[in-house]
Each structure stands twice: as structure tokens, then as C-alpha cells.
Image (cartoon, rainbow, N blue to C red):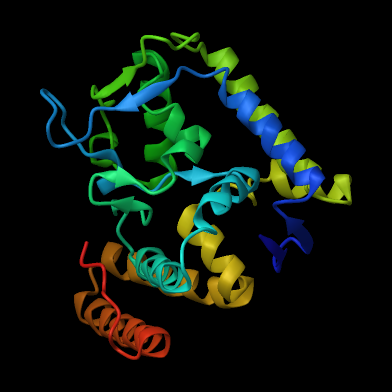
Length: 269
């Protein structure tokens, strides 16, 4: 897959020798994490939440590119449906929402899932509690209201996995090494460093995909609408919020009509 990233101003060819080398390095990095498998909700005992049905994790740009390599085999209609789901997901002001890559109980790109998914339920309890405090402060939510205030117990380490656990120091080093791969995507390494280390390439899939397909300017406009809905909800301005939601639904209807002629399937989650 070849594309020009409109926000970062870089050209990517996922089948070029350079990209193949970077994706090979990413694969090697992932091998330093425990090899896990999901026992699949809801058929788990003692599990309090369904991760992919509740949260869409962020990922670095190289990880997003890795996922695109799998998605490029999909037909145009399926990719357009994915784009529509990204519109719907991104515009939702809710902090809990299903991942757009979830297909019933399975991930469409499980083999290429990002670091945040691979590390899910792999932190020790103390580290998880510290991360929960940080996230709750960033989201301005009570810790118990943050998605996955308790770690999922339905992730199993494969018996043949060479790595059985990861310390905080090791997981931090692994995460930094993926940042390094992001920087390598930029011809101007100094600019790349500034962009990557300021978390500008660390986004949920819906934001990555929308930016690629519709551009950063329109994405910023959508982000402003979502922020406005969250502010109105926080301020208790229900009448204004209801009106804005109607406008958003109208916008989604127009997007759907332009993409599918009104015949596309809408994600009701």
C-alpha cells in the first residue's frame, strides 16, 4: 500500500524495502512480549469487562501501518464501511466505545495488534494502579469510572511463550523502541523526533484512519464537535447537547449517503 500522510508530510510504501525492514524490526520487538491469547468474552469466568467492546486503544504510526498491511487485502466496500465506523466512533463523545476493528468476538487484525493490546492485562497490580491514576486525571474521571479500572483476567499466556512476564522497566524500553521506529519513518529525523515524542503519532485507530482518508483539517473539525459535546454534557446543558447530537446524526447520515447511497450497514454499537 502506498500513501502520502497529509498530517506528517511523509510518503509510505508498505512494500518498499525500507518499510519491510521497519516492520520486521517491529515484529522482533513484539517477540519480547508475552505471547498471549484472548479467551473471548463473554464466555469467561470472573471477567468484569469486555475490552474490545469497551475501549479503542491508541497505537503508534508504525503499528498503524502494520495493521494496514492486513487491511489492504479487504475489498473497497469493506474499507469504506470501516471508514464510516471510524467517523461514527470518532464523533462519539463517550469514553467507552467498541473498537472499530472488532468483528463480532474477533479482531480483524489480531496478528498485527499494537503494543497497547499486547500488554493488556500484563502489568502487575501496582503498575496498573499507577497507570489508572494517571489516566483518570487525564480524563477527569473518577478511577472507578475509567474503562478497565480492573485488569481483565481472561488473557492467557501461551504455554510455548518464551516470555512469561514483563517488568515496568522492560515494557517502557520496548515502548520507547517502537517510538524509535516511528521516528525512522521521517526523512527529517529532528522533526520526526519532535512529532513522535510529543505523542502526535500515538492515536486510536479511528483517528489514524480518518486522518489518512479525509485529512487533518477535517479531522480537527470533527474533534472540535466531539469536545463541544463533552463540554455540554459536563456543564449539564442537555438541550444544547441534544441539538448538537441531532446535527452529528445528520452529518453521519450525509456521510453514509455519500459513501453507500443509503444502503450501507450502520454500526449500532
